[in-house]
Image 1 (cartoon, rainbow, N blue to C red):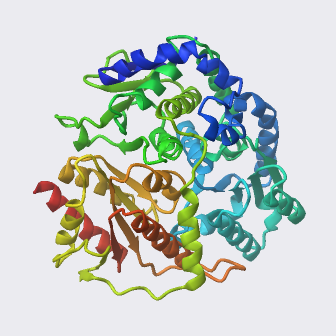
Image 2 (cartoon, rainbow, N blue to C red):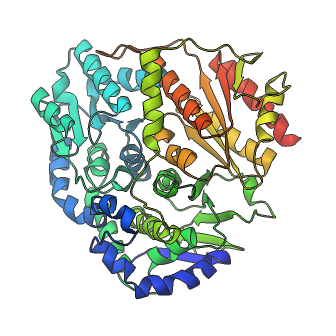
Length: 539
């Protein structure tokens, strides 16, 4: 018997009652686990046919466990017990939640901010190994990190190849080049699994296992959940959760995810990228909004386009009030549950949950910025430590930071959302996440917070391909620290700046209002921004 549970009330229960009988009749669950790629429509068949390996990934990945444990032991014998993972999107978010929940150390480098990169490179390099995860090896963030680690190891007198572990697709250019370079270990993952569904493939398991996670126990949790989730049963929790997510009428397309003691650390961040990137396309989508304890959006009355989802302890038996979802279970079980539910939601919404048609646009814009290296445009306004830039017509008569923010908020539709995007070191400046509840209080609308560039590989798809009701606050910062990228004609500082520029450009081309703040000094700039946001929240 699985420890998973899903409790639905109000509109969520009504959606399940309306859609689950049909899903059972169509044998959706058993066909999904049989990898039937025809269930999302003719236009999705080609992509779905190449992306359903996740349904049995735990079973397929079992032989990896012994290999990972053996490699960990051999590293330990050499005094290497610190692991840095360079990966983006699902290939970094899954190991992050797995290791944090297990309470073991893993440095997740999913940033191009030079301060964060420097921290990954300089701390305890003598006992460090780098795991570079990329399906092709061409992802700019991971390729840059690989180059930087090779140099850092060499500068420390360490054989770089002996400290490099690669996770990639079989036969990829990265697979071939890594073997040719003599890297310590090269693991290949099932190429029929997309990045955001890859938690139980080598992408999720290799860095987690090297860091010390009990992988057999994790895979056991997935296997236990799979037994129930593959059944064509009206009590199938994957069908129930998926129907609640994608089947409300009208669609409650903002899913506020709050952890109320699930014991799974950071799970909402992983679910955010899974749901946003899978559903945010064709002008529709479900926007996950990760919230902590201060949740202005859930203060009565709750907006009619919002569906609260609570992550609760396994022994929880209290049904949530109003229109809501409450989910409990083990980490492995919940990962598979939410993956199934996302596939269900995609079917009910009439979209292909396995592609990401708008992710490449920001990458292309970044490449163009790096190639052209245009001069930075003059700020429209300067207020203290903050340079302010806005789309044509956005700022109006604004004279300072407060008025610029007010001008952005005035563009927020009644059914819209606000996305805060912070392009700098998320470890040192975690306090900037206070911006989310402050702006939610000021607007009473769903507000998200994403660290750049990592969100580009998750919610970035929703921002461009989902409903055109978002407004965007981009925060970047100058730095006294910069790092060369060996063999590349730009630095990490130039790269992260180009990523922010490119994303803002694409958002503007899609008609999304973007207010850009560049902090001339990180400490005083962060303080100034938060002070202004506190005042806006109070007013």
